[in-house]
Every structure is written in structure tokens, then in C-alpha cells.
Amino acid sequence: MSAFDPILSRRHLLRVGAVSTAVSLSGWMGKLAQAAAEGSISKPRRSCILLWMAGGPATIDLWDRKLEHENGGPFKEIATNAPGLRIGEHLPKIATFGDRMAILRGMSTKEGDHGRGTYIMRTGQSPSAAGIQYPSIGALVSKELGDPRAELPNFVSIAPQRFFNLEAFGPGFLGPQHAPLVVGEGNNNPNTPAANIDQMLKVQDIDRPRDVDPASAAARLDMLRDMQEDFAAGRPGVVAKSHGAAYDRAIRLMASGGGEVFDLTKEKAETRDRYGRNLFGQGCLLARRLVERGVSFIEVTLGNWDTHGNNFDQVKNLCGTLDPAWAALMGDLKDRGLLDTTTIVWMGEFGRTPKINQNRGRDHYANAWSTVVAGGGVKGGQAVGKTSKDGTTVEERPTSAADLLATVCRVAGIDPEKPNMSNVGRPIPIADRAAKPVEEVVA
Image 1 (spheres, rainbow, N blue to C red):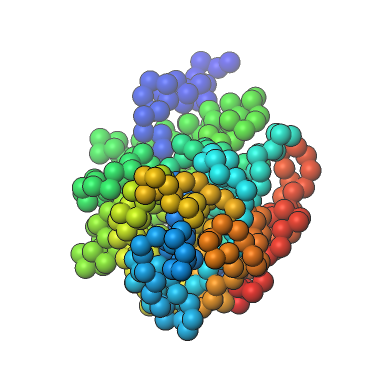
Image 2: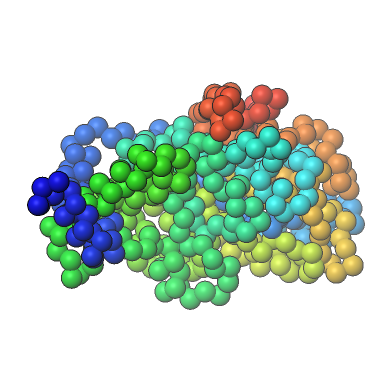
């Protein structure tokens, strides 16, 4: 070895102080951004937004009212702007978009446990005893719709509540490059101050430290990449790939200035007020901004739907958050010409019992409940499926979790039978082979 080994010297410099700023803005990032601007990076043809209702919403009180039965509870019913389509009284704003929505009233998924229900609804599959790591709906859809060269991640998860089943939110056998960028996780407090929400919904730590000049940051990043490449070459596997994918994504985001899309202070105060000054409302506003920037899959979570007690007051309050945010989202997408290319899915891990318990609550129930698809690719203004008069069974068009995933694929312009190679070495289609898309809602 020579007295001055440039590789060794670079690594020595990295060890004595480069790591802390290694993922900051650098000179070669600027070149990457310029190449991206000059190249032909195409925007995704379609986008999809999942509104995830964590805890299991009482869909009998929202989408499938039973006014002539004691199971129906105290809520009334209102008309939507679609003839004959009626929904619960606490969703008056979203009712004005009834013509763009299809309610699937025949959901029957057979799993009333939070963890397993979350997994089934988000992957379209039951947990595998064979060790198959099924991808989440976000990973599956973003892989098909997204551009791997895009400046922003193709899958963004806003305020997720992953404690019921972490694997149900991940990329599974598709690999770490299809994992979501997560913002706003870890806060389920509906009274979080607006200023805190602004900070929560930003991507953290993507700015270059003020005391590090661009040239130094560039050199440090180059050294880190050399070390990463050597490390990964000697230790191939998921961990090294995951680490590399995370850094590549951060670098691309910093290079493009794409982090600005997460800065909601750039929006007018009136716009922010329409969505609601809460985590879910501002998350929906962020979802609209991400769609505008070409992100292919965004999910926004609204929790606290586990209404075993005092169901009716809780549902009314939750609708006060859900209704304005969802309506503002659809209205803005429509005004910007994006609703026809953006599919919106509303669902939780299951529904709740038609029978009201002694605590005026509703318990877990997966045998008969509802989900909603709206916007792009959806033949709206209708309800498909029918439950019994007491709401306990599906009488027409039963729909499984796999059927729903296949339906989402169809309305988003994706072939649900397209295979991906799994971690057990065999191809697995996006939706289960037995799945039957609800073709009645496909435009």
C-alpha cells in the first residue's frame, strides 16, 4: 500500500466526522437534479389515495343505514347528489360527491381481530404459514403506477397507526425500494396544535447543516457511498438493500427540492381551514399536494374508530373530522382536473356489529360491512351489494378482501392478475387468483 492511499484517506476522514451530515445536500445531487429536469421523467398515469380508518369504523352508521330496525341506532339518513343513493346524516359534505362514489355494501371478510383484519384488508391475503411476505396495497399499487426515477417517493404514508400489524404497511416481497416514506407517525391526539402538525408532516432532517459547505457535504456523501458499496458487496441481503434504498431516496428528495411539497404553510389559510386544522385534515391536504407532484400512492389514517362504548357520539365526532377533509380533497382534485385520474379508497380493517351493546357501543364485525371507492376509474352514484334488514348478513354480491384489492386495481388501470416474484421463489399475482373484481363499479 502506498504512503497515501486515497481510498483509505477518504474513509478515515469519514470516520472522524463525515457521517453526521452524509445524507445532506451535495454537489453531485445538483447534477442529479439537473439530469432529472433535462430528462423525460414521466408522471404516473394514475394516482391512488387510501383513507384508512384504523380501529374498524361503524359502517352501518355511515353507508348502510337500517332505519326500520333497532340495530340502526339513532342516526338519520340523507340524500346524496346521486339519485337514490343515501348515506348517514353526518356526512353532508361528502354527500355532494355521491355521483363520484360507489359504496360496496357486501363486504364479508371473516376476520374480526385488529391485527389479522388489518393484514387481510391491506394485503388482500391471509397471513401466510409458508412465510410469504405479502406486500401492502400501497406497495403493490405504487410499483405499478409509479416511476422509479421520480424525485419524490412513489408511496407516502401519512400518520399511520402501525401497531396492530407492522407487516401490513410494508413492501413485503417487493423489496425495500417499494417501502413507504412515513410522515406524521406516533400522534393520535385529535387536539394536537396546528403548529405541531405542520412539523409532524414534514420530512425530517433533509437540509444541509449550516456549518457544512456544499463542497464538504458532497465529499462526505461520496465517501459514505464508497463505504456502503463495499459493505453491501460483502454482505448481500435485505438489510443492506433497505439501508441503501433509504439513503438513495433521501438523496433524491434533497436533490430535487421535493421536500417543499410537505410544507403546508405555503397553502392559503382558507384552504387549510376547509380541510380542518387537525392531523387527518392536513394529511388530506398533503395528499392533494403529493398527487399534484405525481406521487402514485398516498395513504392518510384517521384512528379512534374502535367504538366499543358510546359509539354514536364517537362516530358523530369522527365524521366531523372525516367529512370536511374528504370533501375538500375531492373538490380540490376535481377543480385541478385530477379527480378523473385519482382513485380514492375508504376502508378500515372491518366493520362493527349491527347489534348495539349494553355500553351503547358496537363491537368488531367482519361478516357484513361496507367500503367505498371514488374518483378516477369509478362508476359512481351507486351502491353494490346488499345486507339483510338487520344488517347481520350479506344477501347480494358478497365481496372479500381479495375482491376489493382486485377492484381497486381495475379502477386504477392495473391488471390484478399480474405476477410478482415472491420471497419463496414463486410468482404471486397482485390479487389472489380466486378474486372477483366488482366490475359494476369499473368505469
